[in-house]
Length: 171
Image (cartoon, rainbow, N blue to C red):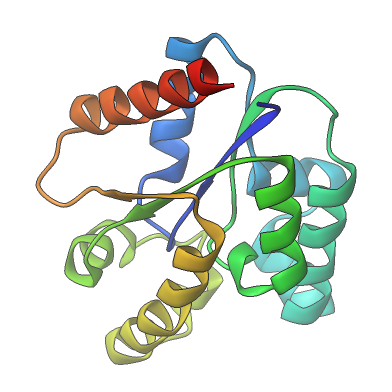
């Protein structure tokens, strides 16, 4: 298994779980959004403002195609799975976990985050509509759906580690 991808809506816990999973599995961890910011030399809101969302989505696809050929954990951006090519790249090059949480749970986490341009420019209703629209793409991308509602980070991590070890032993 080369890579482990974490997909899900913004605020589903991809970064928090990715960092901890990295420690438990002794694999390097990368946050896709942070890596893109580092590569581009500007924040995601700046990229959106200067070049638009379509350009940002192309950057995400290029990232998936060319980022490090090593076993690692990658937490993806919230919109990555909408692109069919991105879903194919992730499913072909690694194991994809879909972190699934309810909209209300997610909204509590993201509603005041200034680094999420979509949150800042949308109403709660618009975000909920986006959440429901994107869920089918996360399901299509994921090899394994992980229900996070009502579970502690520790319980979710134990499940992720169990699945990774189970799949490694099957090979």
